[in-house]
Image (spheres, rainbow, N blue to C red):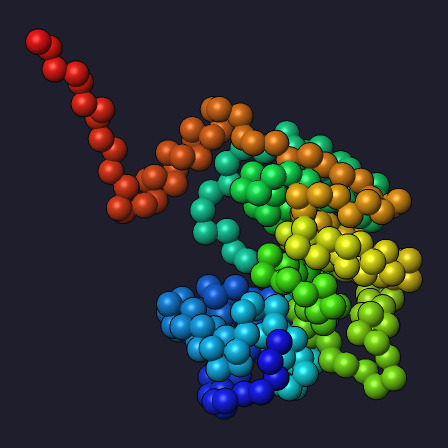
Length: 264
């Protein structure tokens, strides 16, 4: 990450950077700032360009280092950073029931499956159900754009709104903040930095008794406390239902009858 800034950020871009650090999606940023989602997307793109960065995770780290971000969310009553569901949730009812029974029995549950199989959508629905069940804080950390394992602790801290503490490493800062804080941490797309995820999760679970972790990855974290859950593709009927519902929501979608071979 290049810390040299050729162009200063505007006040609005700094607001956006702070929200990115809290794990907000572009749509959540738009809702918070009362702007169009395309405007939020443009602000994020401008920040990436001005700061010479490649990912939202890097913006989050920069915001924690340069902006005044408290250790609690700024929105009164806000207890999660889960994005709103903009489309219907199709299938997986049995998986959700079984996972809901399993999650109270473990502190580390990893949904494992190939790319695009639906791990992220499933884990977000599962995490949302935990808010309704026990009111626990739920924080989402998206790792798909993170390529440097060394930035993982800072990335998690930025979502939680934590800043560097003098004399403490970022891992120690996380542990100190979460030691007595009942919290469900969702780590989505761990595979780019899976080794760093395993190290960080192991350290936090060992020293933070009220912490629970939900993860998604193409490969397990391979920790003793981990329970893995394989996520398979949707069955045919559910896949068809998903296709139909997404097609209905796409104004550009057109169904065409296949051409019949001409009779000679």
